[in-house]
Image 1: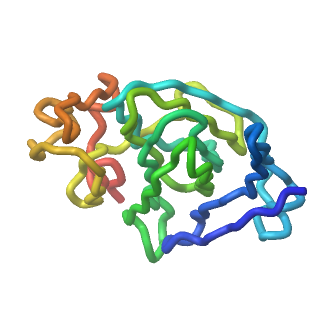
Image 2: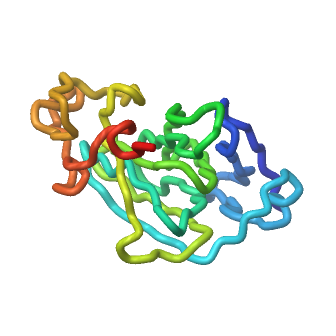
Length: 200
């Protein structure tokens, strides 16, 4: 019953997935994951865990990656609107350090598959957002790393965000266009940029 549309992003290993929505005057039905459809589109990942989070407007989570146990992630939004971003961290990749972003909303029902080897983050643009994602490896305590969300070398263009880079990941002085303050965890304000994090 499924059928999905899979679009390759400009960076290899990133895919936008659009499921078929069956709707009528009662509401709608959608398959949010179908292994057969995925495999027919060349996506052979195996998921081991589902996660869900809720965040309020102005929250930015990221940029996170796993050091020894990288995870592929299939992400979607079931309430609200977020801008979701992946940054290529694969050594030797032609697009190393490059980013790609997509808006995920409850209405567009788009999903974003991020292969292993990327940093990931998202910015909440609605009053609240519920974020669901499937991962290809279990969570391993102590394995998380991170990058500064505003590293000028990466140059992510976060929509609706106003502020001036002060040399660190500190959220002070940044707001959304409507004045909502940018809201990051203490940990996410202490990550360094790409060059400092990955010195070879």
